[in-house]
Image (cartoon, rainbow, N blue to C red; front, side, top):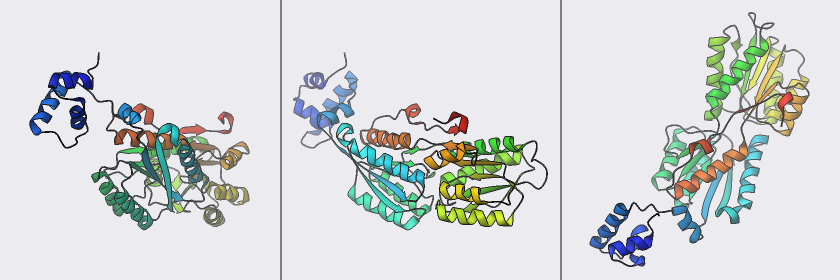
Length: 345
């Protein structure tokens, strides 16, 4: 049988109240008594069930999500998943709030993180912008004992506790492999170009997807020229405009990879373009708009990440960190789904 607090109290010759003070690192216990109780805890191999203790105390976890204020369908879905998680607060013992900040902007995100460092919630999840100022603000939160999870886009080099998102290098390499296979053998002659559309190179997920994409194309399909990346800030109107301008300038575009969002603008531009020789289009995130585009052949492949899984993972990890419990890595691994019109769920 597992040792209990009653066993500790009996072996140490102290009251249950004293054992509780030692376990919770509270004052009011003489140093010699504290050392005796801690020695008994080690000898008995007692492991405290923090989660059960918090459940008994009805502890509530105030968690804060920082989400870009974006017009993209995917970020709206992240927002919706956070709101749904907040609606389950009574069951999951969470008090979830969310703050929207301008997409791809460093200063508003840093100010929000600095304010939260003073408010001291039980944990913070954010869609990160990869900038030194953001990294410093995250490190200060962690230094104050506030767990931090990056969501969708990571912040390597920071002291964040966990990343809830897909392997974006692998996603980019997957897109390159599929695009190269789709285009050969008819279009792999000289002079064929690949367009790449991103939201912003300030976010790590877009940069990593592009890095993986370029790397595999260079090694496996060197005859394909990757054009300079276009940045549409995940805004459908801006994406529509810059793609139409590209199609008017270039008639040799054989394929297109959209690493970010703004897919409504992408789809609209693809339907309106007349000059480009597009034969394959790969984009990210399954939404009602990209689903329709898969079905009608406007888009060939969608690479998808489960927004609900990412939000739930962030909550589980933040609660585990607050309780100083281990995280089950396999449970928190976010997979990359590949959808074509024939396997749509």
